[in-house]
Image 1 (tube, rainbow, N blue to C red):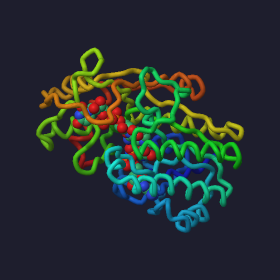
Image 2 (cartoon, rainbow, N blue to C red):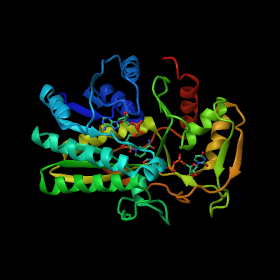
Image 3 (cartoon, rainbow, N blue to C red):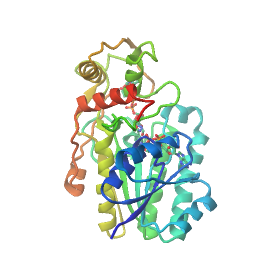
Image 4 (cartoon, protein in one colour):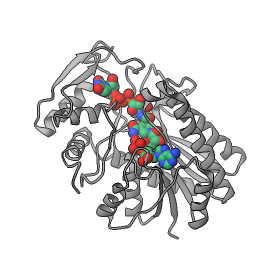
Length: 337
Ligand code: NAD
Ligand code: WQD
């Protein structure tokens, strides 16, 4: 039977691509978003891609009454929970903003789910929970005790709450630890909308190439890596979105339980590799300088994503060039769709 899934943060970067992937698989989607880091127009753009209207509730998930009203109005089978603040640097400066939104949001959502007897959740976590890793690839058994920022702490706490509810509260949970999501939908209708100066590498690159930023600073080239720059596992957001559809099926098929999956391409690329791929696909020479290391950066980290391959039957289909190509196409098409 056709399932109805509540997607919190469904107008955001990863949420919007996931709503497209769900609608393409004939899943009925209800979106809850408070527009704190997105715009309503994204709903129209999703429909421009799939042809299916987006049922949107502009609600803050920390507002239990408003959230409960959504559950009363709709018949919901399960939840994919994206809604959270996500900027690591901001979380260091404003930790309570992160504890309140991300942890309160998770607790309120789960309480409302329980009241309405909805007990299946797919949760957006992050490779940041692995902290300052010394070896890669990282599999899901790697210790997660050393969060490197208040943002990372919120992900650890939320993971733990979901695990508790799976153990004692009859919940079924899938925790997805994303590595570095980049790129955009091939239509260029949806993509990442960074507010202000981007913290992340790829939006900084595309904004520099578009003339919005003067130049990119590469944060250090004296690391113990082949070219001296940091290594990350970049994953195309469309591959990531499709993994959520598989994770949801997996969650519905589980007994009361909680499973954790890494979602990455399973390959590491350096900052200079990313710049070269961008220059190749865009045909533009990128203005960049080598600067100092950024505090808190992990030297190198990439995923062992074999658990997701085996249990979710999921692998990445898009390579680094496609990530850069779609990120650039999105940057150039920001105003039109
Ligand atoms: P995003 O900011 O683009 O999307 C989050 C959405 O949630 C936004 O539309 C925002 O308006 C909404 N939101 C935030 N707080 C809310 C609240 N209290 N009530 C209702 N809506 C709220 O972020 P994203 O990049 O799409 O990330 C989605 C999830 O994935 C987050 O939980 C993030 O921590 C996690 N994640 C992201 C990355 C990444 O690099 N983008 C990596 C790992 C994990
Ligand atoms: C990638 C690489 C930088 C900007 C962050 C979060 C993590 C997860 C994913 C949410 C690093 C270098 C960057 C720039 C640069 N998000 N860089 N110049 O730090 O791997 O991960 O996003 O859960 O929690 O921490 O991603 O895109 O910021 O950086 O040289 O202007 O690019 O040093 O090596 P990061 P990023």
